[in-house]
Image 1 (spheres, one colour):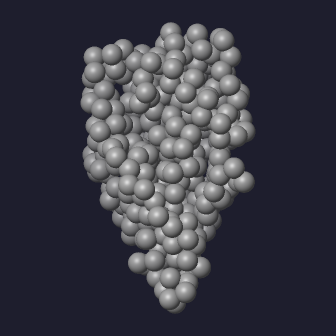
Image 2 (spheres, rainbow, N blue to C red):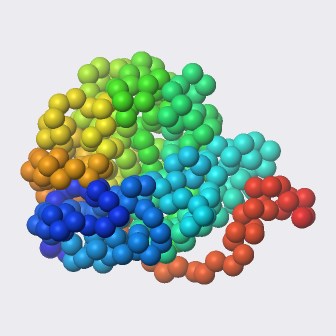
Length: 344
């Protein structure tokens, strides 16, 4: 595993449906920890598989992380009809109110079916589940991506989703730690500031992350929690990372920044990267595929720390054999429609 220590502590996007010669050269030179795909990188299953193979070939590692946001609902980078159309998380939360057992089983099956689609094209990480709570007066950027407003419900359904993904040999990413749900603006566009007292955050927003602290990967929130750090968002706050994410929540897995090109963060891309790494993020996530920015991120983030190497190794160890699915689609639809409970 000594080669891992030389890897760039970055996960990068790419520009299009296939790699350019310049991208291939760059990725071979910098050896990023992994890659992330978006809608701009997706056309057909065969095309995605070839792209994933090309990305891994650049690193020489068959287990290089390849991420995607395949949540279901409006956040589905692999679209129908080529892939299954999964429901948004809130649908499971609604079902949980009347039939918790069916909702948990459906969430597990959904995770397992998501993993089937992803592993079919070589993707081994899904940036799911969203553990942010749903608040009525918050910005709609989270909305139905959340399982709901009750911390216990979100924890239970989030765990079922994670376990379904892991059963399908795909790593989940719990996000956005320690909680994006109260944000009244979209962090893609500007910096959210949450002024809720720490005691209330610990009793609500932080609870699902604490319940799932044993998961292998987490992604930070570009959100300021003024009761804890009045200046820096979680991604660039050593106080939030040390006291809350690693401390109160107890997460000891691989911590990814959210996308560093989002406008919630200030400064140029190198400044943002250095700030995230100094705060305690293990990996800098950069998504837009702009080569000039990726070069700056590489120089700013450095190579994986020894601690990050250990966390990465432990994450990969969660992947193993996969048992075949039998009539999972039918079972899932029956649970979501209520037919299973009615004997249909």
